[in-house]
Image (cartoon, rainbow, N blue to C red; front, side):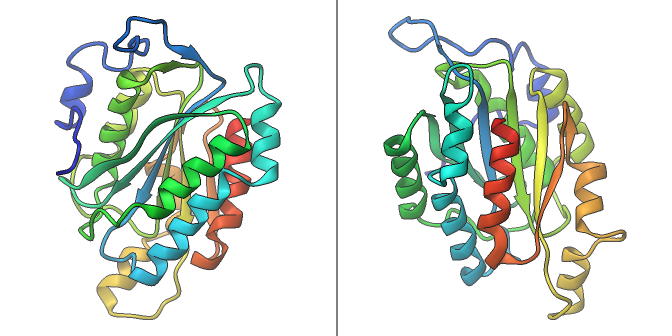
Length: 244
């Protein structure tokens, strides 16, 4: 059964201080301070074939242990970040695959990667980017961590075709404490049926679509993976930029 949190879209975010200071743990202790709280939100919609899914998942599993990423973490004021991993597809298809996890060194990074690599695929559904942002934004209220920078990192290979309004979800998240929403777009070739080509090649290109409609906040940006094989390399560069 999938875990769900505050998923009534923008209205849920406006129903109180959803993205206020992270709650203390159940034991009543203060939340740990880290340099960055990061939600990795991975697209697992219909257009992500099983082969592409495996390449994307391997990229996420390996990226956190990359030496450049570990150096960026170590260079922070606290030398530690907190990460959660979400898979998303249609309007009702979001799952917290890995809850908030502190990462401050190679062993924790490897453990995170192993957990990512071992988890089964959550969905194969439509593409609801706004709903994914709503779900990801609500996770910050549950974290046993606190940080000045709270970032949502959305990956995807196509435009949105369902769920919450993207701009509304983005703007609500930014208004309630998320400091940036970044994107990593996975480019596709022009093969396949016309509906799929239209989905992966929106007018102006997928990078421009994410830049205009998905990303926002302080120093937000869109990274580009030329194909699924290059996704891991693009993700490493993106994580270093976000952490730094």
